[in-house]
Length: 328
Ligand code: F6P
Image (cartoon, rainbow, N blue to C red; front, side):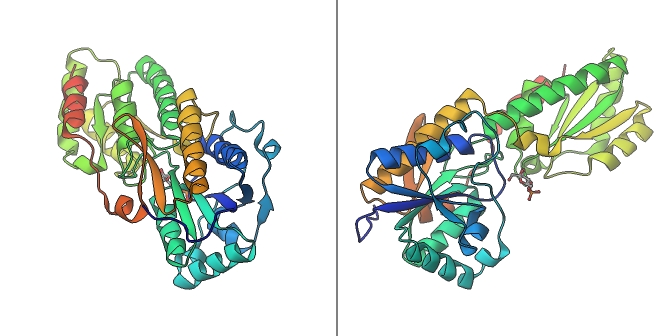
C-alpha cells in the first residue's frame, strides 16, 4: 500500500466529469471526517479546470452543511481538455504544492481517475471516489449517483407507460449511460419493458423487435415499451422505422439530463458518506493512491493503477433474466 513520504496535513477535494446525486454527501463526509482527523481541507471548484485556474478555497465543517439533500455538486464540475495533457497535469501538481495541498480526493468517473493517476506520477497523493450515474467503473459494484438516476428514470418510464397504454402506442425511452447499459438494464427490468437494448449485448435486431410488437398486439397488449441505452442511441429514427413496419404509433422519449439531477436517494447519501469518510481516514493514516470501492458487500480500497486495469461486464444472468421476463 503506497504511503505518503511526508505527513499529510492539508487535503484538497474536487468533483470532476458529469455531476451525480450524492456527490455533496461525499464532499461533506470527506471534509468533516478529515477535519475530525486533524487535517485542513481545501475545496477546488470546477474540477481539474478549476484547479488549473486556482479556484481553491478552504472548506470548513459549516461550509458543507445543508448540502447532503441536494443534487448536483457544491464544488461544481467541469471537463478539462487542458488537464488531459501532460503539461496540464504537471501544472496541476505545481498548483497543489503552491497551495500546500499534500493530497487530493477526486470524486468522479474513470476519466477523472486517470487524471488523478497522472497527478500521482507528479508527486501528489490521491484517493478516488466513484462518482458517476453510469455505474461503469470496473472496480466497484456501486457508484455515487447510480441509485438516484435509476429511480428517477424508472419513475419517468412508469409515467410514459401510462400515456403509452392509453394511446396504444409503442414507446422508445432512451436512458443515459454513455457506453454502458447498466441504467437501461436496471430501469428496463424494473419497469417491465418489453425490450431492453444494451450496448454490451448488441444482438438486437430491428426485425425481431417488429415481429415481437406484432405478436404482442395479437395477444392484446396495449403498449410496448422499449428501453434503449444511450450507447445504442438513434431512438428517433428507430421509432420512425418501427411505426412504418408495425402500423403501431411509436414515439421516442430521450430522458437526458433529468437523470443526473434531483435529491439523492438514501442509498446514495449513505454510501457516499461512508466512502467520503473512508477517503479521509486513508489520507489521515498516510495511505495514498487508492480508490474507494464497494465490492462483495463491503467498502474496500484498491491501488488506483490496479483499479484502472480492471474490467467488468454486465452479468450474463442479468441479461438472460431481462430477456426472459420481457416476453409476457
Ligand atoms: O457520465 C455521465 C453522463 O451523464 C453519461 O451518461 C453521458 O453520456 C454523459 O455524462 C454526458 O456528458 P455531458 O454532461 O458532458 O453532456
